[in-house]
Each structure stands twice: as C-alpha cells, then as structure tokens.
Image (cartoon, rainbow, N blue to C red; front, side, top):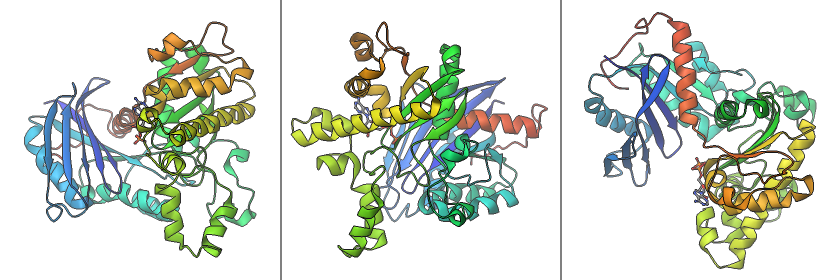
Length: 408
Ligand code: ADP
C-alpha cells in the first residue's frame, strides 16, 4: 500500500490542498486542488500531477456554508479517489508560530493550546489555519498532524530585526517583527543551494512577489531581516495591501474621517496596494495589459519600493552575493524584474534582456555585480518535507506511523 501525505493551506475563504505519495525519501505530487469561494460561491477544483482536471464543480452556498463544511466536501471527494493510498500524516500551513516556534511541530493538545493563544496576533488567518487541524483531531485523532509556520524561518533573526521602536513592554507582550512567507524562503533557499551552493552559502536577498509580497535577507541560510513584520501588511505594496504606511495616515482616517478600525483594516488589506494605486486591478497582468497611465504608475511604484527594499536589506547583509525572484510576479513578469534591477543599476546589478524574457534560471547580464535568479517557489512541498521529517522522527521504523484507510 502506497503511503501518502496530505498538505492543507486553509485560508478564510479557501482551502488549498495537495496529496503527495511517499516512496523512500521522495515526495511525488499525486494531486492538488482548492476549495474556494467558501460562504459566497463554493467551488472545488482538483488537478492531477500533470495539471489535468480531475474535478471542477460548484456548490450551493447553503450546501457548503463554512470552512468546516468545505473540509467535509473535500474529504467526500477525496475518499473514493485515493484508492489504496494510506495517508500517514497531514501537514498544515499555519501563519503564526508566535515567539515560541522556530520550527514545525507535531500537534498535540499542548501545542494546539499554544497555537490558539496566537490567534490575537493574526485573528483571521490563524483561526482559519487551526480550523482543519481541530476538525481532523476530532475525526481522526490517530492521524499525526504537523503545523508549519510562516513565521518560523525568521524566528532567530537578530534582535534589531525583531523590534519596533515602541515602548519595551509591547515587545514583551509579543508586538514584534515576526515576518512571513518563511516556508517560501526556506524552499527557495534550498533550491538555490541545489543550483548555486556557493551563492546560497553567502548573502542573498529573495524577493517573494506574489499577490502577497515580501523580501528577505538571508545569510548562509539564516533570515537576517524581512519586510513583513507584525502582520502581513508591512513592507512593500501588494495586490491589495498597502505595505508600510505612515501610521499617522491610520490616525487621520480614524480621527478626521471617522472610520472604524474595521473599515480602516478593510482599506489597508483589501483596497490598497496595486489596486488602490491604479484604481484598475490588483493583478499585475491586468496592469501590464492596460494602457492607462495609472496602471503604469502603480507598476513603477511597486518596482521602486521593491528596489528600495533590496537596497535596504543589502545594508543589513553588508554585501549582496545573489538576488532571487520568486512567486507569481517574480517568476512571470520579466518587465517587472527588469524595472526593479534597472533601478539598482548604480549597484552594478544588471539583467540580460534575452535571459530575462525567457524566464531563465540565471538572468544576470555578463559583468553584473551579482547573479540574479528566477526560482519557482513551492510552499506545499516544503510543508510536505517538514511533515515527513517529523513523522520519521516520531516513528522512525517504516509503517510504525499509525495509518489510515480513510482520507482526512
Ligand atoms: P499568492 O500565492 O500570494 O496568491 P501568487 O504567487 O500566485 O500569489 O501570485 C499571484 C500574482 O502574480 C497575481 O495576482 C499576478 O499579479 C501575478 N502574476 C502571475 N502571473 C503573472 C504574469 N504572467 N505577469 C505578471 N504578473 C503575474
């Protein structure tokens, strides 16, 4: 019977999942999918490892009213489709490991309690992430579950990267620069080490430019500093999020415009960034395709802020041995990569136009001050790897992990 691992990335309106076969030390993608539109237009879409559609169906909102119902719907589809696979564990993306976790952890009662105590640090995300863990623990208490944190990769960054210039007691209460996208940075750094070990051993900046976006300074595999901080709002502008903003603007919106905290929060998270700047779209593809000057300005603003972040992170590193682009925009938008590196021309960094257009792995021009890479990220595979490692540690003898004939 083939063993398999299930990976869940649960958000407030969607559950993304992947199923991997475990053969020896290898993880092979079997299928991946998403249940999205929870509470509005529920939809399940699953593709096999070649990208062929296995199912694409919509549900009535009343049929799948919440995340728990969506989890059951995924399970109902999965069970008849997993054949003789034996699911030996489930890995979860959990946004917050708080100040406590610098590594993934096998979930038990005490861990669950600790993770729940971090809900105030990321109310929407943490609740959504913990929900499937809780439901699965009730349904399948025998099934090992592993929590993998977006914050963990940054946990041992230096104190200067961990603090806000606020009264000390707030730091002690947990108001710190946690940083996110850690699973992506860890994966990308590993992939970089496979193709350019010398660079990965040195000082690199990774730019994770997706609809959520941040950058990280990594020294020999260790996160030194990152642009997101207490929440995933900080740093560079994103699809709909502001990135860093004068806190006085928030006070102005509340005190002068009479907006509630919830209204301000909605504006900062969902109405700003590329969408707010352009007034057109949060999607870089739409902005590239638009002839409107506002679209060009939004993209130029984004490129400027990313270039500034790279320069700033390079100060923390003391030197730049390599720059890596990843995630939706970083992997696919050659113009954006060109604009960003173009703004860093004074550093001696330069891209080769043909290589950049071809989305080659190395896109630096001859004579560039440092190599520039394009590396596809894979956060789910990182979660699967961590999960497998922890399961092996918990039960090193093959087959000793309590199995399951049933899907999660
Ligand atoms: P997330 O995982 O944060 O939702 P992704 O890493 O999948 O985001 O990135 C999604 C974003 O990437 C899209 O919103 C879009 O702006 C951008 N993107 C994807 N493909 C392209 C492309 N070919 N050109 C420009 N931008 C792209």
